[in-house]
Image (tube, rainbow, N blue to C red; front, side):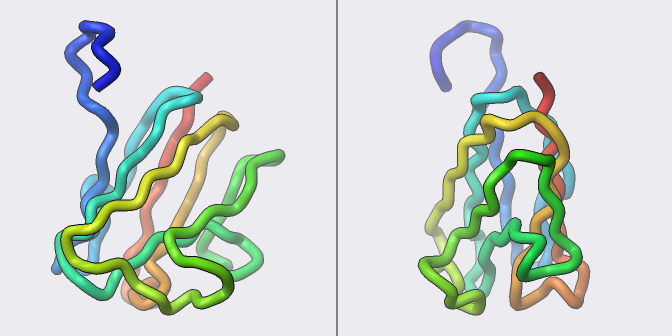
Length: 112
C-alpha cells in the first residue's frame, strides 16, 4: 500500500486456474495501479480493441498488454505478476488472449 492509512489494499486481480479473472470487475481511482497475479500458467492480459473485439478502452487511453511486442499468445509464468497504472478515467475491458473465447474477460472501472 501507499501508507495513506485508509485501510484499502492495492487493487489486485488474479488470473486463476478456472480461466477467470477474480474479481471480474474492479473499481479504482485514476492514478492507481492494478496488479494481476498469475495463479496458474497459460494466461495473459490484453486490452487492445484493435486486436480483440471483446476489448474496449476509454477515449484517449492507450492499449496495454502483459506480453512483449506482437506475440499475443505469449503467456505469463505461474506466480508472476503484471502491473499497469491507469491514468485515464473510464471503463477498460480486457481479455486473456488464449481463453477469450471461453469468456476470460475482465473489466477495470477507473473513476476520477
